[in-house]
Amino acid sequence: MLSPEIKEKLLSIVTKENFADSKTERLVYSYDATPNFQSMPDAVVSPRNTQEVSEILKVCNEYKVPIVPRGSGTNLCAGTCPTEGGIVLLFKHMNNILEIDEENLTITVQPGVITLDMIHAIEEKGLFYPPDPSSMKISTIGGNINENSGGLRGLKYGVTRDYVIGLEAVMPNGDIIRTGGKLAKDVAGYDLTRLFVGSEGTLGIITEATLKLIPMPETRKTMLALYQDLNAAAKSVSKIIANKIIPTTLEFLDQPTLQVVEDFAQIGLPTNVQAVLLIEQDGPVEVVESDMKKIADVCKQENAVSIQVAATEEEADALRTARRAALSAVARLKPTTILEDATVPRSEIANMVKAINEITEKYQLTICTFGHAGDGNLHPTCATDARNHEEMERVEKAFAEIFEKAIELGGTITGEHGVGAMKAPYLEWKLKAEGIAAMKAIKQAFDPNNIMNPGKVFAKDSKKRVVVTR
Image (cartoon, rainbow, N blue to C red):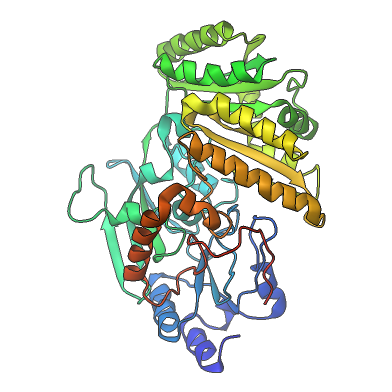
């Protein structure tokens, strides 16, 4: 627990209303959306502005108190689980849209803004913010930036990193810095903006973000391509790209996923096929029409058994919503759901899907595979029960083999979920010891007292998903 001296200093900064350290209040923030990780913080603190964040960090740095910035806790890598105690920093007061600049096509927001709320505000002005994580109804912009979140539209438009052009951030010693700005070009010094994006709260606290916007696409169309052969579906993905067509969305769902999603959403998804590609294109009407015809031709050449184009926007939205609900649908099967995100080059999608199925069979598990096939980001999702220790051993071994295979195919251990605590044991597989050493040197330079989200990204000894109690 915090000493009376530290507590008194924090109370003087944020007032009693914004400081919580009862067991009940701490328990609420002892876990995030990652299964099997839990650890109690010593306190939960809710700053009202950047200056208060700065003062909090000065206290934490002086007394070497760990600090974990947290949005809505939707991350899947235990990134916001306070595994070493300390303070959880909430941004419920710093949740304002500060400016929508239509001349420069930017929006400036505080970190606690809900992603979908921001998107709605932008779209009212005919503008477009493409990153669309499946958790966008509840995830915050600060969380999206810390995890460099992706989404269904990542293939064509990129991820959060591609839209963050300026930041206000507080360093571990309390210094307030600004990076980037409303600029199309800026090469003045190191690109600190990009360094902070995806840093998982290990370098500093983001208190304001300026994001790039683009014009709203003129129109869009959505298509389902059905396959009785997983390989054919996977090959269609790389062939569409090879034909120089970049769809907005190119999603893959296997039969087990289709079954649980249809049971959950009840929208008439086909469940008698082995796989489905959900494909969407946007842009000028003539381009969309032409691209969708070419995509349909490719799918037919790769033995799609049926191609269905959504007749209305309502029908298309139902398909997108069903895809976003895949995790929720799988979570109904068993008490514990582990969603991963092994990522490979697009050309290796077929091999990765085949490997996942073989590993699933080898370890006798229930794994549904879906994901952003267009950018190689697959989500093998295991329905299991953490109380079954023997099965959990098999789950651990299966995912280790999946990560190993992804790297062997030229891929990575995570495409959008982040490293956090859960992927830390595998990071060296991807970066090698030299890469880890370079990252640690950056961390040491920014945060010499290691107060910023300690225990994340850099591996400890165990590769187990464990419950940590304090």
